Length: 127
Image 1 (cartoon, rainbow, N blue to C red):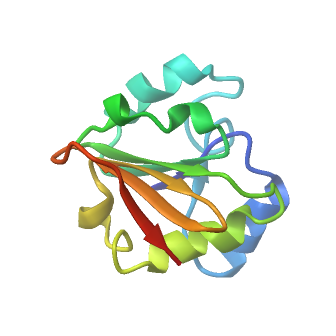
Image 2: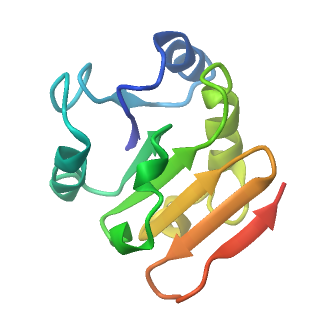
């Protein structure tokens, strides 16, 4: 499940859906509107294989790696979220769900920074 944080604009969600990328959004399709950041992680534990996309960089924390979900922090403009989300889902390093689970990923114009549960160091990949 590709899950968008509430902080992702409706136009970006619509663009993803038009591109055929299935997404759900907190407060719209799942969860409840106004969920606090500290409620997101326990909520993700109730889902199966969710990839949570947010613009909140506070989620880029190695301690949040967990086998049941993936966190993707998009450090891009609010009007660029859909474009970079699609790039992540097509990237050979994290495009497959199995490669994403257990990872915390930061996405920027420069590339990807990835923490994985099984490694003790951050992996950096340029686009």
